[in-house]
Amino acid sequence: MAKFVLAGKTDCPYYAKVELLADRLQRSLPHFRIHKISILPDEWQDWLQDTCIKNSWKHEESPLVWRELVHQGGKGVYLGGFNDFLEHCQNFYNITSDMSEELMQSIAEENLETKLNLIMEEQHRASLIQPLHIWISSALNPTCNMLIPSLLSAEVLSQASAISLHLLDLEGNEEELESLKMETEDLALPLLHQVTIHTDLQEAFQKAEIILLLDDRLSEDAKDAQPHQKIKALADLYTEYGRLIEARANGDVKVIVSGGSLVNLRCSFLLKACSIDSSHFVAVATQLENEARAAIANKLKVRTSEVTDVIVWGDVGDGFYIDLQRAHVFNYDGPIKGPPFFSQPVLEIIYDREWVENDFQDIVRCQQTALVSKTCRGADMSNANGILTLLKAWNGMATPSQMFSVGVLYAVPVIFTDGQWSMVPDVTVGEDLKQRLQLSASELRKKMSNEETVTSNENAAASDDKTTSNENTGASNENTTTSNENTGASNENTTTSNENTGASNENTAASDDNTTTSNENTGASNENTRASNENTAMSNETIAMANENTTMSDEKAAPSNENAAMSDDTTTSSENTAASNEKAATSDENATSNENTVTSNENPTDEEKA
Image (cartoon, rainbow, N blue to C red; front, side):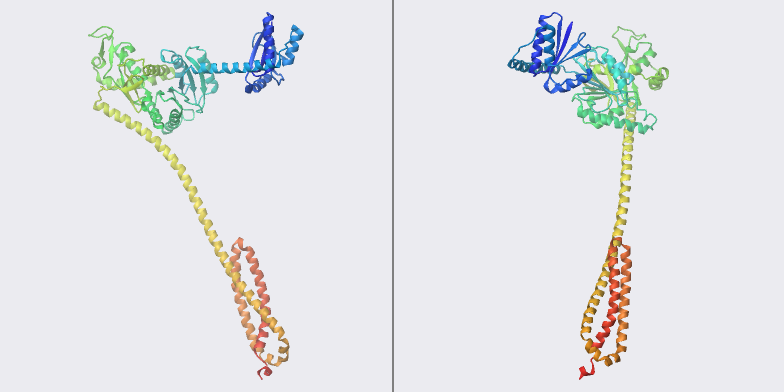
């Protein structure tokens, strides 16, 4: 049997011509089969590239034709494009196509329109399916495996037409999550629409309508941490959960927090991180209820299901109290018997108040520990059953009088009506119970305040590091300022030195002017040599005074040079000062001669006096 696969762009006229020729052959030949693959124009290149890479082919244009040796999906034998297929039909079947270009183009446009219509119909059909989005955190927890089969049944979620299950595990292995996904799909449950797996919070809680938080076990790194560090880790995780739930989840989301410890504390962190109404959050205590019912049933020799209306108060898993004020027992073999619907208050049958207040409470508290020591695993089955029971009630599958113990800050007795839970109004809270609740609430607040203290201490430590850094920076700036002030003082001294040097240069210039005058009067001075010699003594005294002034100028220049040496930036100024001092020394020598000349000019000769 000959089977050909025709692939091409929906708007390609050559694909249209090949398609019609193949249809003609299929109608004429009983064993000739075709399979058509129509690709949108903007998706053609990517599809062609992937197909050629997969089959090691080289092809560039539309259409692409190949033969399959067996039914669809078998190994393909590359045939070629438009011309290759026409040549093959001509050689093997002695048939060809004489379709005009106008008809080819018309069929191509029709193909494109048909393809788009089919896509729109598929999208519309998909939009009619509104799956219920359920998110499960810590999905590799054994509780999740026991939840999934019942969770995807109409018995629990009767109003759902389809369910999209999203499995989230931040510490889990992606391969293990993939295995759980395959196992879930293998259940072939009619309500299951799709299963997705997630190992980060990038898409967590998108469109969530039911969220089951099973994060009862910390990561391997946090297991050996101190208690306050464990609480801090849970606070960080559930605070982030709360922000994401508020930003991404459905407005009518139902959030169930379950586990064996810190259940109410985790629920409190969630509520603190978002502004969603508290009626959308519950911490499950159904597991404790069932364990208490089992303990009472064991004492009264009845079945566990025949004990009802047990109340759990306080912090689930840590500081709870089992209250039997509303508890009843059915089919009890005592002095008073009745039909199956007849029940008796438990406290009227159990007269031992010592057992109720002490031994009974300890039995329930130690139940999980005893189970773990015997089976080396948690009470996963009981935990899953408690979640499913609560979900049924929350979705309207419980009687109005049926009571459950749930809560946010601490567990209280509630009833479910029209998808909302409310506290049972006629429950008696005595002084002893009130003190227990106050103690439980104070312990919970203490844990939350300790977590806030740890956070504030970490922030304070970070702030101290920044303050120390700022202080060091300030000290560095002060040193820099002092250095700049010293540099400024050095520059001022250098400026003073330069001013003194300038004055010295001005004196030198004046001396040069006097020298010029002296040279002009040299002739007269020579004629009066005798008078000049008489005044030599006066001239020498004047020279000594000039030398003394020069010495003082040098002394002033010396400190100036020392100050200039202190500043690297004034090195050039110091060199200029040294040069000016050399010039000053030269001027001193000239000053001596000029002063003699001036003195000589200041003492007129006898002829001038006459």
